[in-house]
Amino acid sequence: MAKTILTVAVTGNLTTLAQHPGLPVTPEQIANACLESAKAGATVAHIHVRYPDGRPSMELEHYREVVDRIRQADSDLIINLTTGQGGRYVPGKEDPKIFGPGTNIVHPLRRVEHIVALKPDIATLDLNTMFSGTAVVINTPENITIMTNEIYGAGVKPELEVFDSGDIHIAHDLLAKGVLKGPPLFQIVMGVRFGFNASVETLTYAKSLLPKDAVWAAFALARNEYAALATAWWLGGHIRVGFEDNVYLKKGVLAPSNAALVEKAVRVLDDLGGELATAKEAREILGLTR
Image 1 (tube, rainbow, N blue to C red):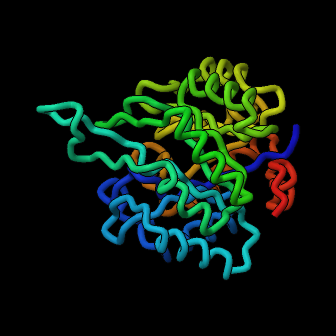
Image 2: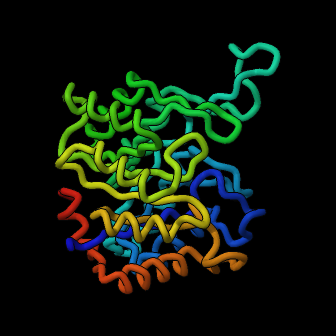
C-alpha cells in the first residue's frame, strides 16, 4: 500500500484544561507540541490557537508566534492552520434572530485573515452546516467560496473538512463550478454528534462519495480514535490523532502528551503493516509546491 501521512491536531478549540491539564494553550506550548509530535512521526500539524487561559482564539499574533516558532526550528513539518473559528451561532432564548452567548460568527474574510498573512502549507475549510455542541455551525456555499478564493490566493491548499454526506455533495458542486481545484484534499470527521458516526460502514460510505482523484484522511473522536485510524489506513486513507480529538492513550489513562498519541499511532500503523510518509513524501502526495 502507499505510504501514510500522519497528522497531529494538538489542541483544537473544544478540548479544555479541565479535561487535560497538559493541553497546550500558549503559542510556545502549541509550537513545542507540534515539534515534539514531528519527532515522534507526525508529518502534518493541524493548529488552532488559544488565549493563555485556554479559551479559543482567532488572534493573528497567536497564530504568527506559533508559525514563527515552528519555522525558526528549521522543521520540515507541514503546517496546517484551521479556519474553523468564527462560524458558530447560538440563537437567543427570547428572540432566536438575535445571537446569544457563545456566538462567534464573523465575516468569512476575518476567518482567513491569518491564512493570507502567514501562508501555511494547508488551511482547513469546513463545509458543514450543522448543530454542534450548543451552537449551530454555519458555512454557507457563498461564505465557503469567499474563503476558498482567499486561501488559493495565498498559495495555500485547502483541506476540506466533511462531517456528513451533504458536505461532500457541496464539495462536488464547488468542484464542478471551478471554485475548488482538483485533486482535492478531504478530511472525513467522525464521531461529532449529528454528523458521521464512527463506524466501518460509515467511513466506507463516505469514501465512496469522494471524487475519484481525491486524497483523503479520516479520524474519529475519543475512544474511537485508533479504531478509525486502522479503518482509514485499511481503506487507503491517511490518518490523524491528537488532543483535539482525544486525550487518552487507553481507557482511564490520560496521554502525557500529543507526542505520546503520535507514538501509539506509529506503533499501530507498523503493526498493521503500514509505512509512514516522510514530510518530503507527504508534500509530494499532497501536491504541495512550497
